[in-house]
Amino acid sequence: MSSLALRDNEQSGLMARWSRSRHRWSDVLFRRLTACFALSILILLVWMLITLALNARQALARFGWGFLWGRTWDPVREQFGALPFVYGTIVSSTLALCIAVPLSLGVAIFLSEHAPRGWENVVAFLVDTLAAIPSVIYGLWGIFILSPALRNYIEPWLASTFGFLPLFQGPPYGIGMLAGGIILAIMVLPIITAVSRDVLQAVPNTQREAALSLGATRWETTRVVLAHARAGLTGAVILGLGRAIGETMAVTMVIGNRPEISYSLFDPSYTIASVIANEFNEATYELYVQALIELGLILFLVTLIVNAVARLLVWSVTRRTREVQRV
Amino acid sequence: MIDPLRYRKVVNGVMTGATFICALAVLAILFAILGYIVAQGIAALNIDFLTKLPKPVGESGGGIAHAIVGSMLLIGIAILLGLPSGILAGLYLAEFGKNKLGRFIEFVTDILAGTPSIIVGIFAYTLIVLPMKRFSAFAGGAALALIMIPIITRTTQEIIQLVPQTLREGALALGAPQWRVTLGVVLRSAAGGVATGVMLAIARVAGETAPLLFTALGSHHWSTALDRPVASLTVTIYDYAKAPYDDWHAQAWAGALVLVMMIGMTNLAVRLFTHSRYSGTHP
Image 1 (cartoon, one colour):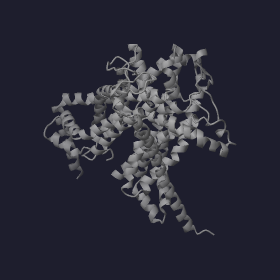
Image 2 (cartoon, helix red, strand yellow; image 1 turned 45 degrees about the vertical axis):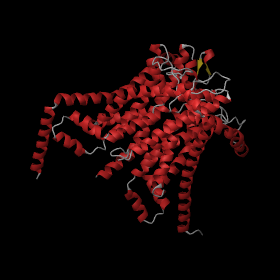
Image 3 (cartoon, rainbow over the protein chains, first blue to last red; image 1 turned 90 degrees about the horizontal axis):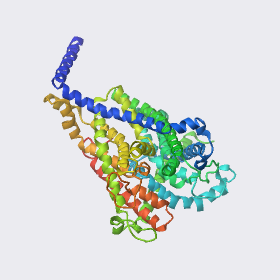
Image 4 (cartoon, rainbow over the protein chains, first blue to last red; image 1 turned 120 degrees about the horizontal axis):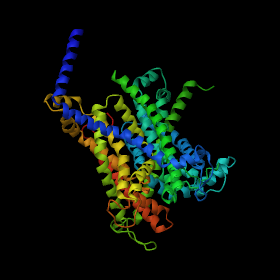
């Protein structure tokens, strides 16, 4: 039996060699050609990193690490500190996740565990539609619909109810950190929902069957599924974070664009991506442009790390299950 | 004393209801946004808007024909530059990429797809705008192509992987060389699915604004020259929305409606396509 298998292997090896030799040069060429294009993606990423670093080298040399915690951004006096933008980016993304994560997990659980047949695809399609709306249109909606609503109704209500917290103090502008966070939350909802749903669907059904057969209720079964998918769900949330950090247009239109650090969510703020979008074309001298490119470099590095971590987490769940199912 | 079983049933009911409410809330947000775009956009939408150039500030009327044409020009350049490399890279990952290098490139492609588009804009600026010393349609198209490539690569890969192995074996058994099998049989039988991926990529870049701000810039005139700044729907909407004129705001909404309809129709076409063979993105 084993010798037969060995002979089979030998034979197929021989055949492969034979067929390879027959078409050798054209096939090798084709294979190399496609490999070049695939490699070019890797090269592109490295090239982008190097280009940004080279074009920011004067700024990098001049400011050093102090760039990250400089609090003043005053191009007229050649003072460039990134802290207000770093702060604005972190707070607006965190706010977005606080709003978006419970909602999108709820939708993902509904879609993969509770939705009646037929509903599932319709609701998933509609949530995906949210992802197809361009950023600039979210911004338009944010300026003319969301921020008046915030200014006239929501922010006064928050101030009167939770006004004792420093988060909800000051005049309600409408335009500001809160508007930016809400817009970002809506924009990252679809990706967190879609990836979470994929992750939940990748959990083997045996997990659900085992829980149900022990007498667990629907929700208790869902909790078992959630525990199984924990790494992947974390990945989905981090993927959403990556989107929120890099999102530009909609945030630029509603966040107020003022490079100051303020605890109140009502106040205008500024993010890294927004300052690049607003000031890049107006940067009048070399160092100013370089400081903006350095901001871009920081944004690029952070999103690279965030996305890499997220991908690995998501794969750790979906790949493992696929392998189990194959066996 | 609460009956534990009853407590568990109540928790079950509450949580199931909560997930349902989440779904309803998200749909409500979607309809609030789409509803406003339609309601506000339809008011300023007319034939002039689609076929005329903008009027000077203060005069009412006029349109954004130049921006619609500009957007199409930019997307055309992006397709020319991004489509071949995206498809070939996808072919490599699906047909020859079952090794460490292939998996690593797949990973890098996903990361590149998550890169903020404004970074791609800066990259295209330093690479094309600086040496040419002017903003240009070509630079804008190139930036969009860079955004398209990872999307096309991954969708092509996923669809090619769905083509049954027997098809490849059959063609190889007839004595066809590997490259003819891949291009003439595998890619051809998955053409519908690959086209779907390309359409999705087009719909995605059609809505991009950030990478165009410092590459294609924008313009108030007719322009189809590749080495000149060119208007696009998205940048025009952005400029009009920021401007302090009510007239321009109305036009921004109408532009948004046009853009959403274009993207929506592309996506809908994709949905209708995806019922053909090997074209679903989920195996």
